[in-house]
Length: 131
Image 1: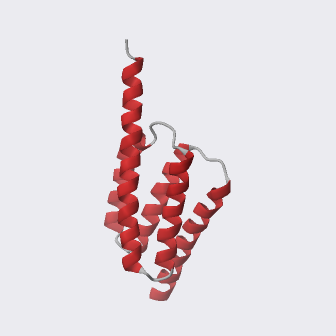
Image 2: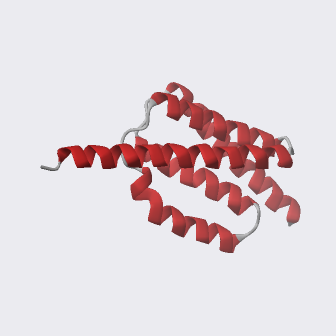
């Protein structure tokens, strides 16, 4: 049974990496990317076997999703996010867990910074519109 779980988790991560690779040459909507990002992170967490933490992440995602969807995502941010996800997934698939953790931590930091910048931009625009 353990082998089938490991194989399932590996396939789930491979599917995620392939989904992000397919985006390299496609158009996108910010809402689609946010939902894909949430799926990527919950897939990784689910592969750890910690269902309680996975459920907690889903709950947090639902609460912060509206803020994450504020303002458009730049093509540069989009390409950066794709590369980060692919890199993390490939490191996991290669069994380089320490490197994957470091890459994931850096990705979370850069994602947080992008979300804050977009939220600040949206708040600034909202302030400019008020009369």
